[in-house]
Image (cartoon, rainbow, N blue to C red):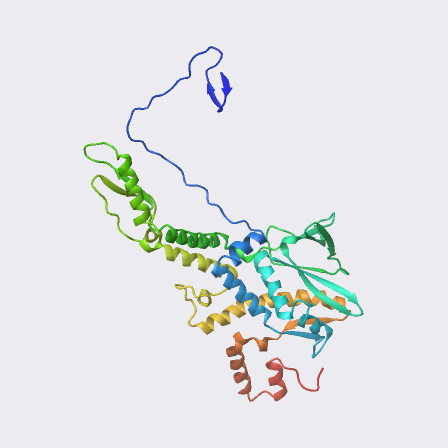
Length: 391
């Protein structure tokens, strides 16, 4: 036996002809297995393109969290005393020449939601001048020492590389969300909804393709006359032209086929009704909202109105998603900057300025105001205000 192109075994050496099998004329059945699904990669660039830049549910969810979190003002404390003014607050108000504080924090939260990581670099220009800059996650690599501890960030921009130290006196800060299988990098919330994200995007592409080619029915015309025979070339060309001109395009969607004798339509794919198109798309959108921590009601997704009203959903959004994220960043960023200013500072957020919790704040003030057994000083402390003349 010899192996000959196209890589099939054929008799060789003895000159014997290759064995052939002759099939009888007649029908045939073609069997094929379902193709493996193709999923979007979990890296920052892919999630940014397929999620934030192409998917309306993911885009709006990320924007809602980032904008709501970035709008909350910062407070600085030294021991228990609130600082009315401090260079730390000035730095957070204007981190660099290109960004105000709200824009800087919105970008930081966006990086966390799309990649699970955010990288901050403190640039000191001397004479007390400082700036904060964000490094794009897909351009940063965490460098570890021989023991596996992260010691620096390697930032790449084109062919240029530079190192930003993460050590105690370094100018780099790595913020990462919890990742159960990685010691150095965080896990993006949007990556947990990757399947739902791809289903939602695929549904949109399918719908657009249906409009572009609607009605060019997805199936086959079978010609099976009783007396046998085939379509002539002229009949075949005429039928093809009629399908192209009379049943293709968005304006002809749903037009019924007019078939002559011997022609039968065989559907070869599921219709939107069979696929439960809108329900599947809304279900995928709910999964995206769930992964991000945004109540579906706030994104306008029908069918999952768990909360009694919009105000309750908005309050849950702040309490369960926004405030825990802001509190975590406040501790990390406050510890990083406190050391650079050489003071024992604590950074926190101003809960009284959160518009989404105004109803809770009014209810608290009403309860405290009606508590006759409390003094005015105790009432001020109960609602979070310091007592005049103290601290």
